[in-house]
View 1 (tube, rainbow, N blue to C red):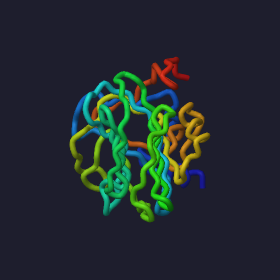
View 2: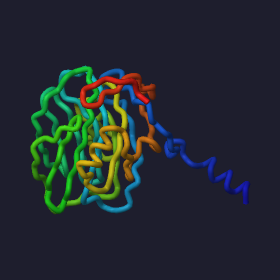
View 3: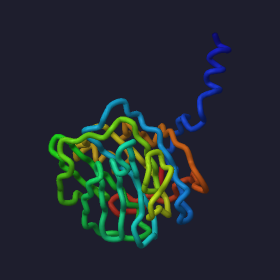
View 4: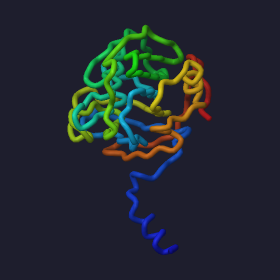
Length: 229
């Protein structure tokens, strides 16, 4: 029996191994339409409520792709793009734009929530809530997903990418199948919340190209710098 268990473990793909990424970042060193990080989520049924939080750090002045969730029939099922002065969220192909303030070389903690029952979309950046909007009320996101960091997927499972690759550092990526409360969002801001679909502290991922895993040297909370734990 022990030999059988060992043989099963040996054939599990390396990309399915879980890694605690606390205190680490994905470093995207250059603009490219080939390099990305794919994540393996824990999704067992269509999503009618979603929360995604992550941190990004860049001096790129233009548009950059942070989080791209595609399904077999929808490339922009849940997509987050950050601009110099705005952020755009796509849910099942419908876009919502938020006017935001941006400052280069500052960690930005971004959280997006969506509730299919009401269609309400919330964007929080560094703990600040922007004006609520409504998108794709009554729809759902299919359970079969492809999730990529740093690129915008043109096709399912990241075989083709649009413009706007990310250059910089991404960290603390979490995803839930429910809408976080304001208290839970505050916990996420201070790295005290863990996603039940994607969990940075038990991350299943695969790197394509020249992206590196590096230690995080500097963090900001509410625009105050402090060493990372």
